[in-house]
Length: 399
Image (cartoon, rainbow, N blue to C red; front, side):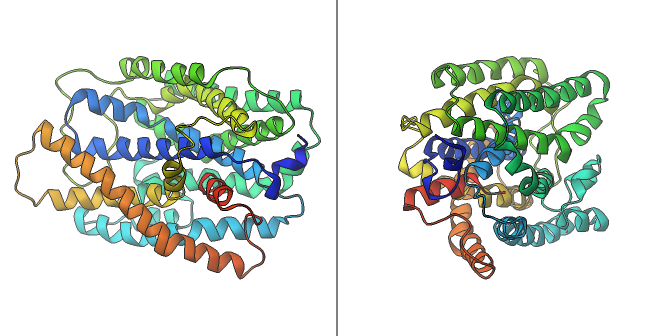
């Protein structure tokens, strides 16, 4: 397969990656909401180790934006289409999150909130900044760094040999892992998240590592490792990550029924999750993408309902943060006995409600607004394709 097959209507379906993206999004939703509702230590440990799923989003973003890129697309057109996809939901969720925080906390960090609207808050390694307004939107800053450089660097990748592409991808991943390891060793725990986990530059490096993988796979390179093995590596590493980072004692803080942006319990290190899981995400991405391109996608990940629901993942990601805060605020005033069982029940209901909300936002706001802004500036973001391919590629290239 030539490099040109990466783009346009000839791009093979990536249905397994669509299903994987949905699962990763649900893991992030669970990570944030379980910290608020669940009191069972084992379940909260699972939530703690779900945070590194964010790394997969950045790898996927770089991979899929490269996969669907068209050589004739100008930088201005690319940026316009990214803006049409990102901005409407971002602005609305920001506008919803600000008054919720203001009412519940009886205060508002005005400058950090305005910085969050402009994607600038993630550059300040302070909790009141990078989690201002819609606390999950910090990740968009790393995406913007990638988008800003993409039209200029993407054509260069086509001129590189496969071996060099793989070296760059491995070097990028290794660099982020090194920075994460140094952060764990030498940076105080309360500064680790802001200096590395939130920092847009390492996240943009992850995007470019995914981009290099996409071009290499389009040229015929395949990772000769069964998906079952790469998946097993990730699953078996999670207990180790929990054991290394989670405090298994009786002093765990209660669920965050008080309304605020919560930090993880003491001892949980998100940078350590990057060190352990980032290379495994790369292996899983490469093995799944190769199978998708060869027409041997993983059946259960390619299941039609999963692929359909994966189109809601951007709305799911952006709405669940304010939704957690709103649910916390409501539950503070609901008289009921908070037990481990009721916490789990609330969590299940919350995840289901989050999916329903994401579907509604996608159906009646995100998709119509994207079409409106995108078509007003030129042709569609993805060329005319079969309906399943449009859905699969769209689900993956959000953010």
